[in-house]
Image (cartoon, rainbow, N blue to C red):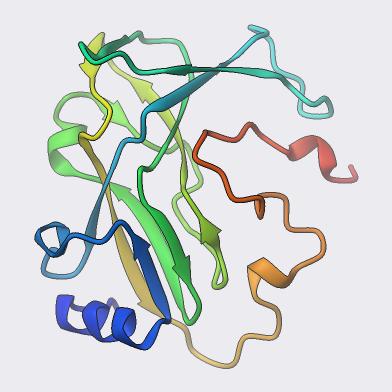
Length: 178
């Protein structure tokens, strides 16, 4: 079951969903619009290695915008910091974003109950497109969880994305044992 606008507001009031900054005009019928933060990052190596800590370089999106190029993975970040303590958050692209040929995530659209952070975006484009800090980039949808939660994400000892940040975070795949 997906939370409606009224239920999202009720959960915010109870403190089980936190969105900072929160703007009521960003609340949709059953979602909340999130915006692109001012930082992007790109990997410094063209060939990435799943067993290696691949380094990234951060840069700020200029006021006049930044043109994304095809065949390059950009890591972006949401302007909004969120906490979700009783629901499963999903981050999806907006139709307006998709119609510009912008994908905001390769595979990581689902958050875990207990995720408390900004969202790193895995941005790719079909053709060159100029983007701007603060533009609407996606929408959060909240699902009800069936059953009790044993371990919240923010209490897991091996959670790889717990450090609060306003910048995109690179893959931590290298921390896995395989």
